[in-house]
Image (cartoon, rainbow, N blue to C red; front, side, top):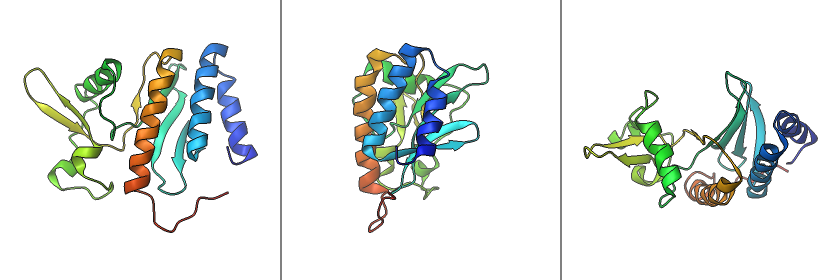
Length: 174
């Protein structure tokens, strides 16, 4: 983390978690920090974005029942495990699903080929759904066993964002 205020923000959140879960969150936060993502408080949550593209990659906090949540943006990733495929399927099958307007040329917020950056799932009835890439999907039951894959997904998403979204010539804040 770059500032004392950011460290305190994260430390206060981690103090709310049971120790084993706090250790998982801490490891993931340190990985984000190593990639250049900084925490910022946003409407009672903590979001992590990068100075060179300002896109959010992770959102953490407590839900309305006071349970911790971890949401990850991994829309530019392919070839993830069945667990993460199920997360995409459930989200795209839920009432939170909103068709990605970029698939119809109606959005200019994100860069890169639309098919390379949207969440995609083909249901058994052959319907294929696409969801907006700006959404971080909640990872239910986050645990130690998820850390390796989440780090790989963070790395892939980061590379995509740096290639397509980073502003040329902009320097990261120190």
